[in-house]
Structures are given as structure tokens and as C-alpha cells.
Amino acid sequence: MEITHILLPLLLMTLLGVPHGALDGYVIRSVGRNTMESIILFGLYAVIALASIGIWIRFPTVSMLSFLVISAVHFGRSDIVDTHYKQPVLAIVARGGLWAVGLPTIHWQTTAVFFDYLRTDLKLVQIALFCAFVPWAIASLTHLIIEFRHRNRRVCIEWLLGFLLVICFPPLWALCLYFCGWHARRHMFRVFFSAQNTRHAVRDMLLFTLATLCIAGAVYFFYARHIDLTPAAIMMFFVGLFALTVPHMVLIDWYFPHQHRHWRVNV
Image 1 (spheres, helix red, strand yellow):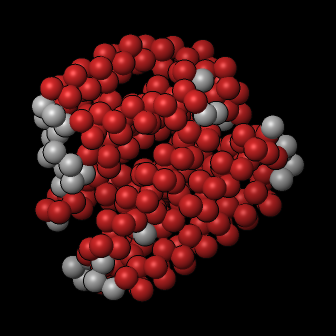
Image 2 (cartoon, one colour):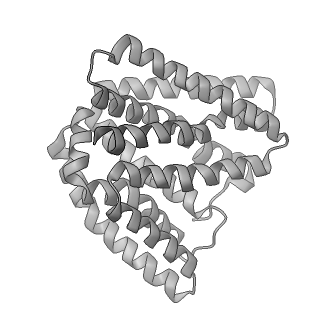
Image 3 (tube, one colour):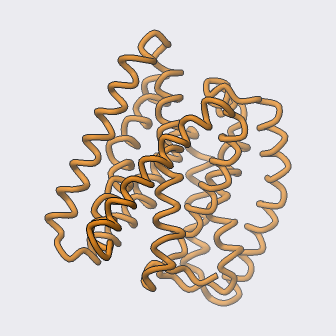
């Protein structure tokens, strides 16, 4: 059960989902105005990632709640790129919140175990999720009604398909299918489409992915091998994803939209 419902989707998200973040290395090099700017961006990226790990170790509950919020924003913003929405803010809340609020709340009995592995305050996380669930549900229903009335039916179908994944699959499998099959895939295609040299983009993606996996392997060997495999895998994946998501968001959702028009999302 643990292998098929926990370890396998985590492995797939690591191998198929993490590489989209590894493209940040190529993006930094390709859009940096000069070598010094690229070096500074690489340095800031590493510092933010390391600081995120330190903050999680010291404040796991606050970090987990922050992770849910920034994941909702990042997933939502990514989903609405290159697509016209009548109410884009509602779209961000509805689509991003499906994975950051809807999924863990609907599957609370299962996800509570994961939150416990991550050493968070279960009661506080449960209260936060349950308080966010109703506003998210109202925003999602409003989003569907508005977009349907304006004949934007494709985006309604996309949301409903995501909701079906959430209710029909175990939580990590639902997240895996979305993360790998939709979010990471679209981001990778977007970067490759705009890349001046696709071979360099693929090379950098593979190199940074390999470096990330080597770091994860070293962390497991020196710090986590004494822990049971399942909680160790949950902790390493989600803490590692948090550490990569924070600088990834700074880069993709803040820095580049301010510097390059084609990265902007109109909200």
C-alpha cells in the first residue's frame, strides 16, 4: 500500500515534476542581462532555498501553511497563463486552491498522516484548511458560473477534470497526475518554446535535476536513513519541494514578470 500509494507517486513527481524547476538554471542564464546578474540570481536562488529549509526545520507548521498558500498562488497563476479569463483572480483561487485546499481537506484522514510526518501542528493545520475550504468552494463555484456564462467552457472542463482527479484518486496520485501531467509539462513546453537554444535548455535541465537528486541522496544518507522510509520520503520530498518552490516563485512569479512582458499574468 505504501509503495503504490505513497512512494511511487513521490518518485514519479521527483523524476517527472522536479525537472521543470530545474529549468530555472537555464532561464536565469538565458535572460540575465550579463554574467554578473546571472551569478547574483544563482546566488540568491541558493540562499533562498537554504533559508527555506532552515525556516521549515524551525517553524514546520508556519512553513507548511505558507507552502499551501504559495502553492495555491503559483499553481493558479501558472494555470491561467496564455488563457483569457473573465475573472482571473477567481480563476487563480479556484484552480490553485483545488490542490492546496480542496485536496488535503477532502482527503484529510490520509493527508493528516503526511502532515504528522512533517511534524506540523495537526490541529492548527486542520483548522486552517477547514476555514479556507468554504471560501475556496464559493470562489470555485462563482468562477465556474462566470466562465460558463461567458462561454469559456474549456476552462470549466479543466477545473472539473481536476476535481474528478481529487475525488477519484488517492491524494498523492491526484497531485502527481496534475503536477507532472499538467503543471510541469506546460511550464517545460513554455520554456522550450521560447528557448533560443533547446539543446542547452535540455542540458541544463538534466544537469540541475541530477544535482538536485544528488543533494537529496546525500541528505538522506547523512541525516534521514535512520528514519523509516515512508516518513523520510514524505519529509524529504515536501521540504525539498518547499525549498525549491520559494525561489522558483520569486523567479517565475515576481522577477521575470517585472523584467519580461511575456512572463506576465494579467489579473
